[in-house]
Amino acid sequence: MRRSWRKDLIAGVTVGVVALPLALAFGVSSGVGAAAGLITAIVAGFVAAVFGGSRVQVSGPTGAMVVIIAPIVAAEGVGVLPLLSVLAGLMVILGGILGLGRAISLIPWPVIEGFTLGIAVTIFMQQVPAAFGVEPIPGLNSLQGAFQAAFSASWPNAALTLGLTAGSILLILALERFAPRVPSSLVVVVVATLLLWLARWDVALIGEIPSSLPAPVLPAANLEIVGRLLPAAAAVALLAGIESLLSARIAAGMMQGGTYEPDRELFGQGLASVASGLFGGMPATGAIARTAVNVRSGARSRLAAITHALLLLIVVYAASGLVSFIPLFVLSAVLMVTTFKMVSGETIMQIMRSTRSDALVFVITATITIGLDLIWAIVIGVLVAGVLVLRHFANHSGVYRENHGAGPRVAVFRMDGSMFFGVSDRIESEISQLSGVDVVILRLSRIGVMDATGAKALADLSGDLNRRGKLVIIKGLPKQYRSLVERMGLVGEHSGSALLVDNMEDALYLAGHAESHAGLLKSIARDGSGSKSVSLRVKAVIREAEADHEALELAHQGETHQEPVEQSEAQ
Image (cartoon, rainbow, N blue to C red; front, side, top):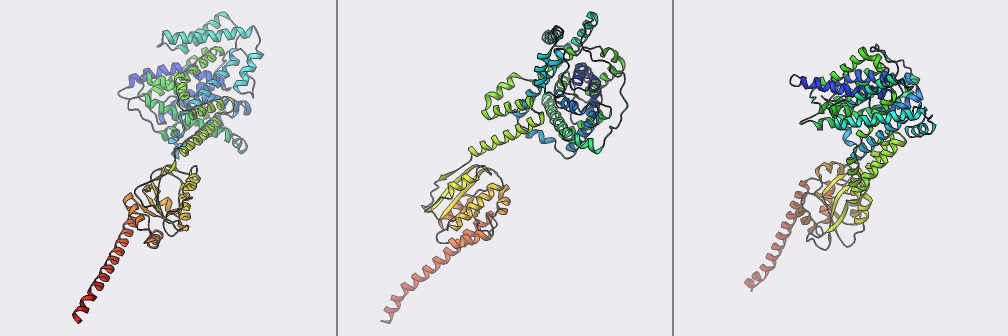
């Protein structure tokens, strides 16, 4: 901060100007009012900046949070919002304490992009009633509400608000195109408010907002209301954690040498939501758009996000009267433009051109986000992606017969890819039908993944071959799976015992002596530890037996050769 405080102050003012109309718009769109959005941006923005895991993250109300909060508020009422914020915040704090910050890496890229597209479409649809000058009907999702507003609009009043909304959108786009350094959203909000004041048109306004921050109050709670809100709080906490970590990761990627602490980020964001709830605000998350503005404006320390919160605090104390005259249609226009910035056409084309599986996951996630629920979209998207990944592993795993110069009674198989529940049946069926061989060598050095089902299948296969009189030699089993196969009965005192060796030379040597020393090899397999010492021990015993055999043959030949000499001397 000592090195970058000037740039941080400029960045904080810039992002504060951008955040003001968004905070008001998100508060209105969620059904809790503009004041709640502003309080959340101030309180949560300050707390997350101090305690979070990113130096440049800007937190506050976001579009994704609006999408999930709006139906909860419609069903339970505005009064539950502070308690919901506190409960969700405590859950996010717990996630940080438990070290769940790295979980964001487990969510596939198509799921995140489909989720983002679905949120963008949902937010856009939520603004349609305000654009038509219609009060949204509680209980309808955003898609139904948009169609209902379009068909129930009262003309020509609807034409006025619709035209003003379209004009505001065009003005924002024009300013961004020809004057990119100008805070387009704030300028359009000011212009629309002045125009409405001069023309005296009858359109909906934000209305009165507090001229100071309320005192913090612990939300009233009892077991019945807490139990009813817990599922909703869990959904909010999950969304808050995912969006905050995703935003922090993006911010770190925008800076040279940028880093963030995921677990601390969860702790800070959870604390921010708790603080927001105490002041009557809504749950908060890291805001990707505002964070990106912060970084592009030169922010390098937490001072920038703190400055953004303080600027919004000044607005509350010094300009709350002016803010109350802002028309709702211009906030809808601001959010509609924001939705188009959330979605990258190039990214969508990349996903659709990548693989059919990724494209399917993307479409399913976006569709469920729009039509059903955000959290279900993430859960189903991850499940579908997981199933497709397992299918990919199964298709690229197999068993292949090889010839390493082994004798006709020796079969060598190479296993590739993964040994897990998706391929174990196929491996068993391909090997267990062997006939005419005494020794089976399994090459496992190319196995990348093995779970308990795969290890059990290998042990069962070895046991089946043992019972049919065949010796099993396993070559190159990765060290990280040796304890697993021991527990599954592949080596040691079990019917599925096999010899484990580290190289093909040892495997072929043992296979060459299997016929003459089958009992010896099987007894050592049952008693062995499955390490390299087993093959060395086996070879030593075989060589000792061979040496004894050669000595006996030499002795026998000496006796046979000596008898004629003694007879001739006697004669």
